[in-house]
Image (cartoon, rainbow, N blue to C red; front, top):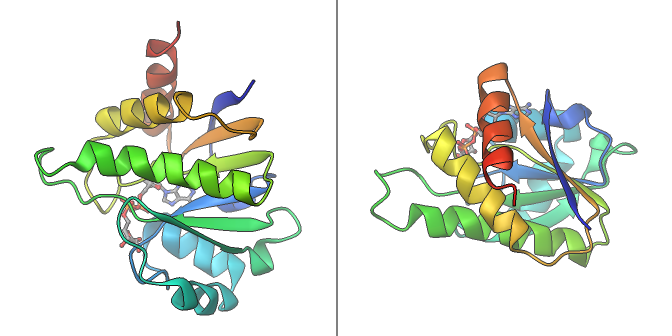
Length: 170
Ligand code: APR
């Protein structure tokens, strides 16, 4: 049974097998959590990402975690949708990010995976809607991953993610 939990903090400091990165299609870094992960992993991450790019929105690519190790072994890069008001299939693309990232985690045998709140920063996706889409997608995915951490970077995000988890309780 896969456990889904909300934690608050910096995703690069977590003790998990894999961290999911909210990347852009170039996979060579950027701002937000992408910038934090690249800074912590070191320059080899951008070189590895470049070799796998472009990554279309909704898909995932896996690289080693380089200097993030030994705590973290894999970085799963996924590209979320830019929010345009919800009329351009954003929810379906976001759900695909979570599904494809979980499949990528299974492919490398990760037991624990941490997700940032994909698309809710620079890409402008409303946090409440994104959290509901994330929880619904993750709960509908068969996976061998034992523990999924939804990482909130601040208290407001933590409350939104916790509410989405509770709302989805059977
Ligand atoms: N740990 C955990 N979460 C973080 C961290 C961190 N160190 N830094 C930022 N976040 C959170 C943000 O607060 C937000 O809730 O990650 C979530 C996603 O925000 P962004 O990083 O801005 O990602 P996104 O909205 O998906 O935009 C992606 O931004 O950085 C560029 O290259 C990236 O073009 C891509 C775009």
